[in-house]
Length: 171
Image (tube, rainbow, N blue to C red; front, side):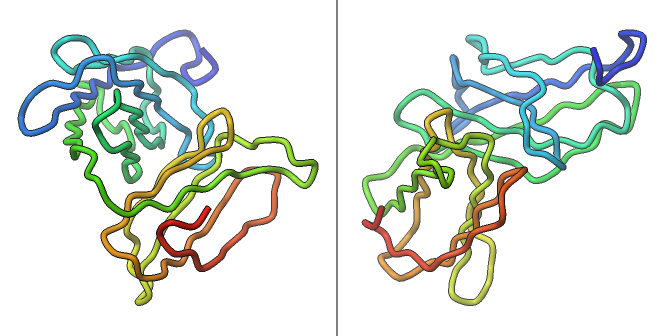
């Protein structure tokens, strides 16, 4: 692959659980930390594991998990594969709560959906709360704890950054 010249690289295992139980059939993508583009993706098996082979030492990436319904999506902070022994990444998902959501649809100036977009929500004090990626239709859902306003930033390669203050229930 282009990430591993000569086809050499090492393994990354992502284990997805909720309340200590494996979450099967979650869509797990490793995304380049600079461009946010997915470079490999797999579904978790019955034990909640997704194993990725041939990842280059020094590769910087995020883990994006789109679980089956009933669970919150998850996007990690940055990881770097630093050793030949590989990397094991545990992800604990939260069960989806009935509550407050901010729903976004990210579109271009031509009204076409834009995917591979990172959306970050912050509280009024600037504390980062949640990071999520838009799906192939440009849609993203952020689960928030209250009905107060949140500051939201949107970044996509090839587009100017966007930010706005939004409240739960707004679209």
